[in-house]
Image: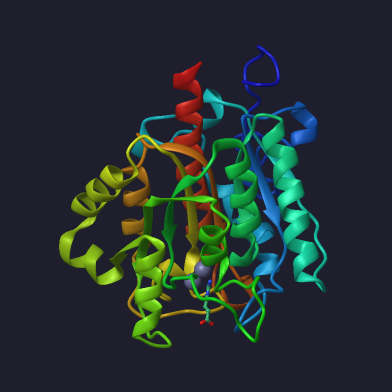
Amino acid sequence: MSSSSAEPRGPVDSSRVPRFAGPATFARLPRLDEVGAADVAVVGVPFDSGVSYRPGARFGGNAIREASRLLRPYNPAQDAAPFELAQVADAGDIPVNPFDITEAVEGVEAGADELLGTGARLMTLGGDHTIALPLLRAVARRHGPVALLHFDAHLDTWDTYFGAPYTHGTPFRRAVEEGLLDTSALSHVGTRGPLYGRRDLDDDARMGFGIVTSADVMRRGVDEVTEQLRERIGDRPLYVSVDIDVLDPAHAPGTGTPEAGGLTSRELLEILRGLASCRLVSADVVEVAPAYDHAEITSVAASHTAYELTTIMARQIAAAR
Ligand SMILES: N=C(N)NCCCC(=O)O
Ligand SMILES: [Zn+2]
Ligand SMILES: [Zn+2]
């Protein structure tokens, strides 16, 4: 633990305080200001001014926090109690200007930079996918160009929308242009749906991305696909970005640009668990738009996604100690 030699402070005990009581933090964990420092900071970014279709992802972080009340402290799939292995804390939100995208992007970068500067890894809850760019800027400043595993229905390597360079469809083209990514280890997973033209794929391939489509996951299976991803990543520092629309709309209706034919939440969680040996330096879960959700289907899936990613980071922090 970076804060002190004391044991990590874990979640509120749901056998003593009902899990539906009190204000929500991620997984009922302490706030960052209650523990001083954290190994993994869960941070919200309530920003959705970069969307091309339905708005509402600005409410995603808090919806994920609410849904995460039901998470329990032991993760059997990874045989780990993540919140005992490392201090995980909820760092609140990075508040940014909803009326000025350029200023917001700078604000996210500064907020992420400050948290990373404490030695914490970030588990960011979006927000729309625009925020991946400033998050990657902050991460690359510390680690150099990182490997990227991008779970999404969409490529998000388009150039501009209405002339705007910073949008939720363009973060990874900007990241490649800025040299933030190790272009020998870039993968999209779960890609599907109509494109603007064949050229979208040509541009994407030229940037260095490999694609595992949603249909590939179905045909080849989770284990084979995950093995291939692990080989491509090797021991490089890895950033994982999960756009919740990688899931089929049946598994994640609460999102802004849904596409039919997506992954199941079981497939996504199993692929993530298969990455436990990778050097995960930070991650995000974005594009949860609760206004289109039903019975917290999407925010529950997102909370479990963040839980698996947090578990991977906590295990690695404990193993390195
Ligand atoms: N990043 C997400 N979720 N969507 C990008 C879709 C961009 C488009 O409207 O073509
Ligand atoms: Zn998407
Ligand atoms: Zn996206």
